[in-house]
Image (cartoon, rainbow, N blue to C red):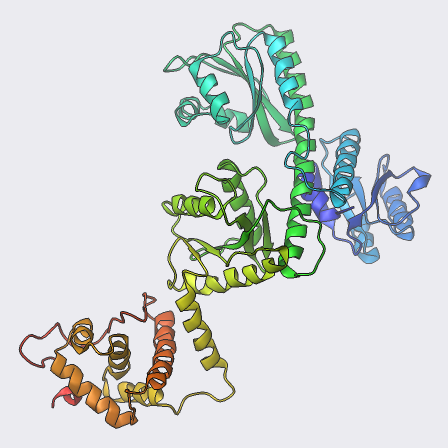
Length: 555
């Protein structure tokens, strides 16, 4: 069983487009419009043979009576106002099959996705959900046609398969196979000749001449599904190729296109099934999801950002792409409340794919060109029932990351513990039943506002360096005598006895909440309990006596 929207996403825009979203969204089977056996609920009805608006309307009515989830029609009937209007009225999904796609291919792909999702529902998700190995057979077949080494690559120049034939392989091809990706210098060579631009726009075979460092000529065949480029076949130095062989290679590309569509659809179903199970495990401690994880303990990681407003789906896909490119073939990724969430193992070195050390190293590398990266980990979860707790801890760090109060680009709950304590205390102060507006800190806030003094910052710095007045004065860029005079005035205003330990703690927490609020709305600069920088009109450090003081500072 699979959702209509998930099926459309899996097969891609090259095949399907949703016109109307229905009330029943789960597909349990796929049937043809003329098949009497489609008389059951949850079906996906394919409008094969529908050649008029009246026939489309009749099919929608019949499908609604049987409880079908959605109906697929070809243009122009899917866009017909009468048809779309009826689908909206009935609450049945309406999907358009793109004009260049065939019903046969759609049946094959849809059945493959449904069968695969059914298998996933009752078994462990496999890391290789389908036969990418079959692509190697296609590569061998293509190599046999032109008697030359062949690679099959995706649209991002990642190598999917390569032929056994090596007789005329050049260094570029060897490094491509070893690294499973075309080297950057080789990509630059082909890009300078307009190869990738032609691949995006044309269905025609492309010849590329020899290049530097022993790069041999190439024959390139685009692999497309409609207007979408899925990949390409690259044949090394095939020499003059007869037209009939080029046509045969082009036909092979069409078969590979269908295979890639099926693999992508199945992989999409696998990822969505895994994401749903992972989301359930992270939200409900006792929920039986059937999710299989690598050996624990684990950390739940919020993949937040500090400066972008990209949609959550885009950020999940971006992180998945980055993780896959760095070796994690099936990342444990999902999204909760708009935040991409990953589960990694606690143990492992920076080279251990899928571990916290590996993700931390990846975040450091990514932050070199994207400073908005924030990878925030909860404390280790030793059982699956601990995963929701670890997720809550990870997401609690997001606000601290966005206000610059935790280490960037990656940190753990333990490392940010003191900031968490202060943030929770601040939240309690702000949400308490009775506000603390009449306390001693508020007295200083009002005095600063009325007289232009810096008593709030002075007291916070004094407490941060308690027992070390010279350090506190140096941090404030004032003379120690000025600090003593201010503290005398502060105690007179508030009546505080700072010799009491618990009183100092309460004042320090309240001062932190006030200064953090200023930081959030104004400067957004780092403030810590050990070093608070005063932004005041008072000048530099004084060596001989109090200077640059307000009238209240003068003894």
